[in-house]
Image (cartoon, rainbow, N blue to C red; front, side, top):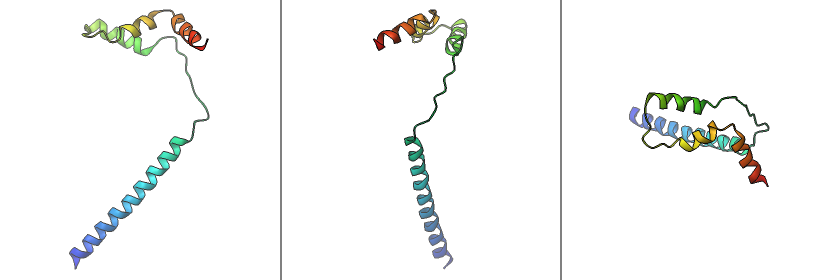
Length: 90
């Protein structure tokens, strides 16, 4: 009888955990549907990605130059980005 009781307990646990998991999934989906009220933007004087890339380039050579386009755009005085955004709006 103890084996039967053990199996019933395991089945009950699995069913209960499944219900809880479904409820948690539903709550997560509901949270995703709610749009945030505020958007926080922080303006910085230096780009941490650019600084980190410069450090890594000082230590080693890149094989594929995947950050070249980003670095050229970031090393500019920032006007190229703002101009391109203004051009897109026009």
